[in-house]
Length: 284
Ligand code: AMP
Ligand code: MN
Ligand code: MN
Ligand code: MN
Image (cartoon, rainbow, N blue to C red; front, side):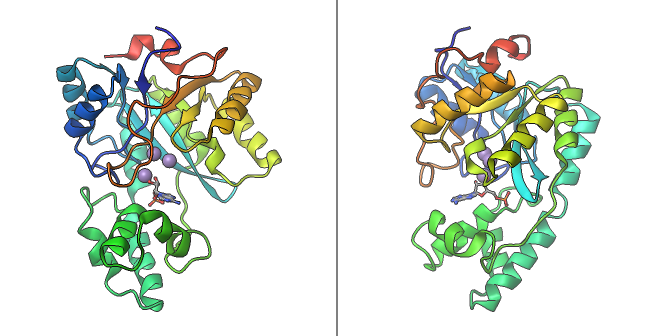
């Protein structure tokens, strides 16, 4: 399998904060020429059976996937797992615990929004939720757009849902070490998602990559919808420096919101080991 394979190994369905079903995503991916696909819902693998069946009926290669929320140095970091055994008990239990607390957090977010005059945001967000265990900031963002408070979801995050803003509630997610071990213990590969999105100092970022590698992490997203072209190059170098394989994924959530369409990113820069080369035995 080559560097040029059209692999899209990061996207979200209604099982977390995407707006399409696993079947609609698979169809869309196939329509855009994707050859190897993974659904990576946040902290949740409830959509994977449907995703696998849909990928198979579309004739695409398929890997199991999830994107796990982790707290590292007081920031939220996302770890993508690919190619794991979705029946693994420790992984399932770890994800279940990571999902726990989202509802309480959501009610606190609504309290914060009520204080600035935005009423009934919890009920409003719930209307957009496909999976009651997975209420996320994205669902609040959709409600605030629907109710005319903001024009688009990006604006909601900027004004209401990020650190220091009225609807932001600090949260403790999984430990980095645990998330990696859940994935690798289920024979999967752990991958740092969209590293350019975090606001770490260079020393903190070095600590993230060093600890990640130390706990058995093997990959990093280099070409993602969250990175600029310059960042593709920066994290290609980071991958080489740390001896990590490179991943590619759109992080597609919705036709209306996502600026990066499934399967349309450029290929990985030369000289990297694609994660799908190391995962070939796990492709279904
Ligand atoms: P949560 O897991 O509830 O904290 O929600 C995180 C999700 O919010 C991410 O996976 C993205 O889908 C979305 N998100 C985070 N930051 C932004 C942003 N600045 N603009 C739009 N969506 C964002
Ligand atoms: Mn998301
Ligand atoms: Mn993410
Ligand atoms: Mn994502």
